[in-house]
Length: 328
Image 1 (cartoon, one colour):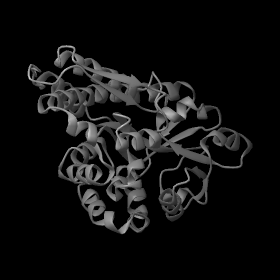
Image 2 (cartoon, rainbow, N blue to C red):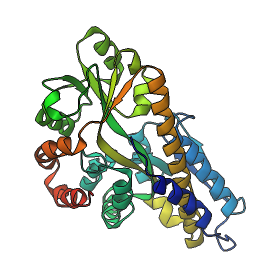
Image 3 (cartoon, one colour):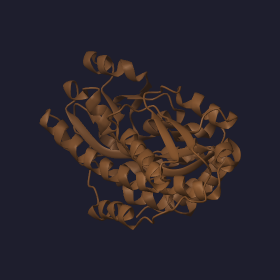
């Protein structure tokens, strides 16, 4: 995967340019609990800790954000429900919000976003504002910033450069109808399967390939049963750092700005970590024997388009078409 140097420079510049905030007129001591599903080594957790450090510093020690990794505050949906009820404060969440907000489904659509630059344009621009506004209104959860997610790539035991070369590849996909229909349209034989079963199924030949970000490819040791990482990059997506709307409205304006600024700084910090992590993952997987193949992403995107448009909810389709129109 090619990482744009300008993107990394902008991420660093955002930290340097971030304004200083004084919190003299805020409320008294505030404690916010941020629960998420990632482990302590994950870049999302490290960025969440950075958010907590920034909030503490900007508020002169008044605002404490306690970070709970590994679902220690509950599973993602449990935390979201708690945020709506006022019993939980913050989380990291994405397309799970489509249970309330149809537009949240657009966070992870195959070949809607095809680069990190386009992701920033969408998530950080007017389209992202529309998605966030609907999430606030319908889910009662307020996105404050977003983190990047590594693009999903196809692994296999043969090089695949074009959709024609899929040729009925038996491919594990998550149990998501849109993923199934898109891979069928591309020419594979998608097989929904629990993630925990994938390694053994690849090992015994029940399936021929799977698709996931590099981080999961490495952590699951798929290099032991797969030879190629085909750079399909079929899903570029982001995930929100969000706060309970009820909790947000209870905060003083000065404290809202402190938390918002801390999140902006955490977003820039996460981007630096993300870019470094993606480079290191590729180096490590190559060292473990995997070969990276430059697939024809434009050919994959063109063939997937009809299935993608047909597979999203009708109320989200016009905005999806706008997202696709932003592709370079």
